[in-house]
Amino acid sequence: MNFDDPIDRRGSNCSKWDKMEQLYGVPAEDGLAMWVADMDFRPPQCVSDALRGMLDHGVFGYYGDDSGYRKAITWWMDTRHGWQVDPSWIFTTHGLVNGTAMCVDAFTQPGDGVVLFTPVYHAFARVITAAGRRVVECPLTNNEGRYEMDFAAYDGILDGSEKLLVLCSPHNPGGRVWTREELQGVAEFARRHDLVLVSDEIHHDLVFPGQNHTIMAHIDGIADRLVMMTATTKTFNIAGAHVGNVIIPDETLRGRFAQRMAGLGLSPNAFGLVMAEAAYSPGGAEWVDALVPYLDANRKAFDAGVNAIPGLSSMPLEATYLSWVDFSGTGMTPEEFTARVEKSAKIAANHGPTFGTGGESFLRFNIATTRARVEEAVSRLQDAFSDLQ
Image 1: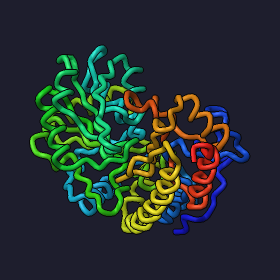
Image 2: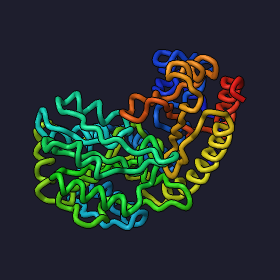
Image 3: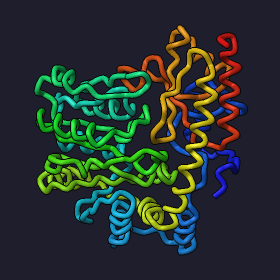
């Protein structure tokens, strides 16, 4: 597990590296891709070995008995998160963006409101809007660089037309690990407004030392309206497999979701199932246990360098590998500081406004790359904003 091994992903049909010039104007030959949320690391050897076994067999027909795959999911949730999952609760979607879209389709009607605590992962709003539903923003409070929820304010925003709440836990892009008390507040808010609660926990394996992630399924009073979403894709850097778990404990909600899955003729691809089963294993666990300290050191290096630049502030990461940097202290417009990052530093980072209200002065940087690239990014940012120092 050599996370310092520099892997050149350019020219490999890689969205992160091969599309940054088209989307951000950052040249491919000497730019740094720090936007799309995948890692520049090879997955665990057990995943590669599983794929190699498929290739060696040489026949790629329909996938049959998925009991081993379901057993791997239940093993992982039990051993890593203390959650006992019945295999019958599990649905497989084409990733969790698709899982979110399926929840919007199954549990709401056109015109209904879907609640988001913003700023939040931009794909949520995209699929909600595309489905003809309304995004209802409940802005997070930025309390000295730490996002917090204000349920009293949110009660005043909702008008009763909302049917669904999508929570990002741990939070993307702010990197918060919500406390048990905060999650209990989310559960009570959902019950108070009769909302189905979708808890997207795709980053729940990437939590830094000193933090304790509580899965929403362990919160009281929410089981009858809860949809849990988890995945191997972020944890093990296999996003291209497009495989995600939608886990629904409640029988009524499960029936509604199953009906929509059947009606749309959805079924997973064999490659994703094989990769996921291999990843949720002791070998995968060993890899993650080595990855998290490496990401933690990247976080510390990036934060130290960025926070040394006057006017820049990197929100303290508690989980994920996505650093959320506030440029408001520079006094620059978003156009000005973004141009410095893209044109001077030659770094492609996600634009804050795409994450909704509260993201206007931010850029999101993916630090799941080699330490050398993180250090290079810091050096480029310091040079791009050198007149402030």
